[in-house]
Image (cartoon, rainbow, N blue to C red; front, top):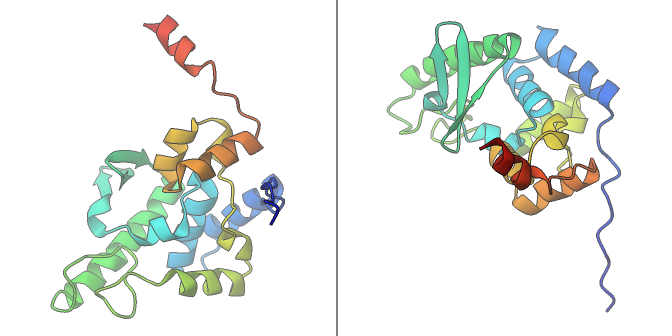
Length: 187
């Protein structure tokens, strides 16, 4: 059987659509808070929905007005409007955690109906589609930072595989071959 060579993804979200959906997630108070936070993190930071749903209350670090997400040992500082949304989600999650401590040992940022587990990704995908944000559920969603990050950093940041991150950086035609030599000359 002949082996098909992989094709470049053809269903990336266009930049104008990305910006419009991001504005909607950040500004539309009629959308549910979890959708606004998840949508904003996917559109702006390129995080995968499944990675976002793994976040706990302890992964949100609030210091004065700054909000950071703890991801794979590193910290991702959030811009002010997104920080405000994440802070609201954090307060909601803390309230849920307080009322369900006996039922769960993990304080999920996005607790599911069963408080011992986070919201199921299928539920969020359906919710996104129903609210007109279905493009975010596409697995080949390319983050906006793909052209400005090395594949290894992009993979760690977004929680995707290194192969997927390399496909993204190749798709946006970002060449990092000069990275090592430029780092050596900086020393």
